[in-house]
Every structure is written in structure tokens, then in C-alpha cells.
Length: 201
Image (cartoon, rainbow, N blue to C red; front, side):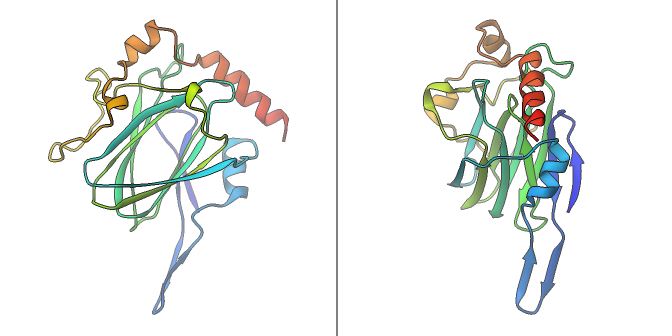
């Protein structure tokens, strides 16, 4: 499995090695040892989610209160999505930085997003399936969002696809408004939380 750190620190891309034969393809889409070695601590999986989206569906930018927030390992077994990571950590040297990875059923990459980062994706195909391994369970009272079409973020969403947002995502604040409202995690909090995870082994 090949690993690449993204332009947003504390997020990584994982590309599995695929073994095709006349029966089909075999691959390891998640390896706990590789992920743990990369992120510096064991990833405890509390919940696994799956979404199925029509072309143009845009989910995010989502994040959760820290601690414990929610780390995600995101994989697309069917179809294709443009996966997006945003540094929303107030005080971060890379605050507002964005990186994207195409997740699909060809290269079969996955993305790991650390606690405190923002995450979104757009379905590039109909019936795009996304599976998320999550470090904590869903807690609606701790969940927040940033408007994914915020012009200040300049996320490179495809020009030829009309975005389809939920009412909640469409009403989310811009990144600067979320910062002014004090709902974003701070960079210092995120560093301290990740250090506590590393100390557990």
C-alpha cells in the first residue's frame, strides 16, 4: 500500500496494490498497521457508514466538536467521487487550505482525515458508494458544517456538474463566518488531542 500525505497536514491518501486475474481483482483497502504507522497512533473504529449518491450530490463540509471530533477513513468501492479535505483549524499555519483526491473503483484509493479537519465530497457518477470508517459514533448535537461552495475556499468542484446539497449543507456558514462564530476547532486543541492519542499507543 502506497501512502502520500496531502497538502492539508494530518490527512493522507492510501493507494492499495491490486491483484487482478481471470476471476476479478483482489486488494486490501484498509490495513490497520499501515494506517497506525502513518498517523502515529492506533485508529479505533467505532462506526462504519455508507452513503449512495446520485451524480452531483455534494455532502459536507462536515466536522465535529473536539474532543473527540471524528477521524474518518474514506473509501469509494463503486463509482467515483471528488473527495475534499479542508483545514478548518483556527490558528493553523495552513488554515483554509484545501486538497482533493479522486476516489473511484479504478485506483481504489482511500483518504484518512484526522480529527479537527473538514471533509466533503461530490459524486461524479450515479450510484457512487462511499464507505467511512469512523473513530467515534455519530452525535448530531456535536456536528457542524461549512458551506461547501464558499468562494473563499476555491474548492475545484467540476464545472460541468450541478451540485445537489441538503438544506442543512446549503445553509451552513462560510469558513470565515464559522471562525467568527467560534465553532471551529483550534489548531492547538487538535495538536493536544492527537498527542493524547499517541500517548495511548
